[in-house]
Length: 442
Image (cartoon, rainbow, N blue to C red; front, top):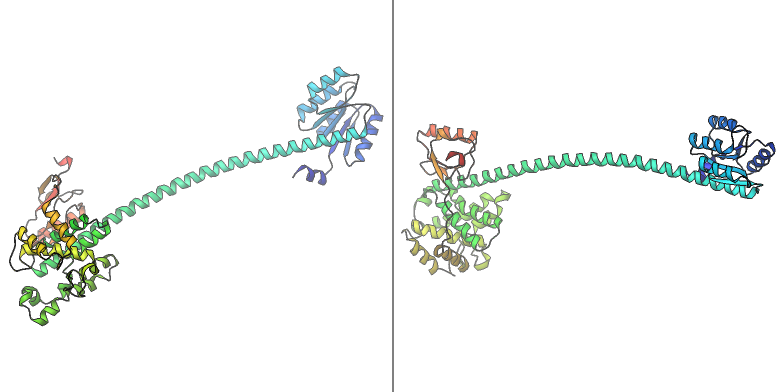
């Protein structure tokens, strides 16, 4: 509550201390007429008794009194009730006593006898305003101190909460990152396994799809495709023949040129079937579109949509070059296996007709300026029984038939090691496992 509210609610209490009854009567009457509550005492001792019994806002004390003069009385008031305003009533001739009262009692002001009522009234009101301001200041300082302590405690608590939540969030992010990386590895391994199964279905040479995918990746990198676009190209290259799984064996075992017109038409539908097989998976949707267009030609003579030039997705144009470059050397395109140089010349001959010129140029640049290979990492051949948790595969782990079990760079754990042992036991043939050589293995 501010001072004005306090004064409106309750009049200030004043104490007059003087051994002269006339002085007490005149001054108390004047002050009461202006709304103040006035208490009186005819000596310093009785004044102290009044102060001990009741809260007083302001004291006016005469200087010259028997037994306890005003200076001594006001000094006692200052010591015991320092918040009470102290005013001295004195004669002009008593300078020495006035100075003593000022020094000992730390009085607010002094009133000279004879006084004027207006001056006394103004002085009292000013003194009470000062006391009110002092109280408000003390109250605000105490409130500020209390609030600062509460704020400090709150800030400390908030810092602890933020630190805890940050630690929890960091832990969650780390867990999510590990889970994401594991899912990514599992996804890549699953794609490789599906690619291997497709090769087995067609009777292709083990690893052919991985070689095509690797060449497609290198071409995509040279053409500055983004990381996600490169991944789509690699996945599409690995699963490019997934649509052939729906074809009967007679269409897969015979050369395309020896098939009937009806069978050739059925065979040419496998890119569309491959797209349909993958489009339900959001993560493979882009790769599915690349698979559909892998047999389109720049001159518009391909299938299934007769796209030409830039109508064909760039990833499909890359896969076509990488696929045929590998197929020419395996004899699956011309039925005669060509050397790398001959395969290169075959593709150059069809540059701009069958194959995209910029993709062909990228292939030729890669073949003619092969990047320096990184220093191969040391690896060690181990029996399955010697595998331990934490070891990293240096090469793909495949069966004797070429079936991919685990891809290179896979980190072995107890579950994977047990599965490898079970497979080796059931197959009755030892597996060749090569792991990276760690410092402690040297």
